[in-house]
Length: 291
Image (tube, rainbow, N blue to C red):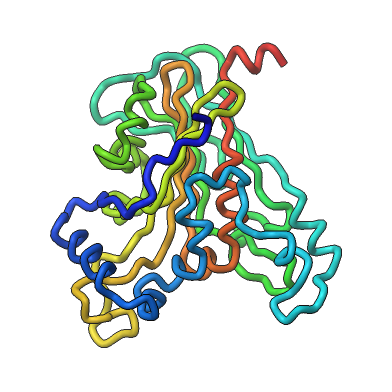
């Protein structure tokens, strides 16, 4: 099955199961009208977050692309901008890697060149596509298409784990923990809250003979200020950010992408963010030689 549903439920990834269960138990008892308070940005984008079978890569239909919320026709130039993209690519060393414990992953953040030592041979190219309407990462990927310079994402990281890997590790990700399966804790720098994030949905697809796994993670802060609008008196804080993860095992090595955004960025451009993650590609050394 080219697009198998990995999970449509909020599977706990938390290292603190009591907190996770209290969150999930509360969600079952909260009236539908109150869901927006707990899931302030997920509830407005249910179809794009929870639909793991969506193979189209985007959540916006033609009507929303052509018309503004007030019913007026959108400017044709902004529609054309949304259809364009630019490719960001980087290379990682090929070979079996180093299986010694404690070895950190090689990373490229926002298109930066990975700090690599001597390679084991050739290179493996990793790439993803960014909407042309997004600015440079140094400015927070500002989206200028609507006439408002709004940030589109916090960071986009691609990585190569240090040691050898097997596809079955990704098959078991929803059981052993997505962050653990993808080696997030071996990245030189990462948001520790991702390790305790909840799995909202996942999917598996095959592109150019490579099996890619995708996971949508909802992240909540460890605590929220007492008396703030985020403190709902339920014993936990609402989600405040989304992390879109993707991974594949190629030639015995695992490669991944991590797209991070806050609630406002997700509400504004979740379809674009998911397209970035789904554009993730890994080209083996052999593929590069054949081109």
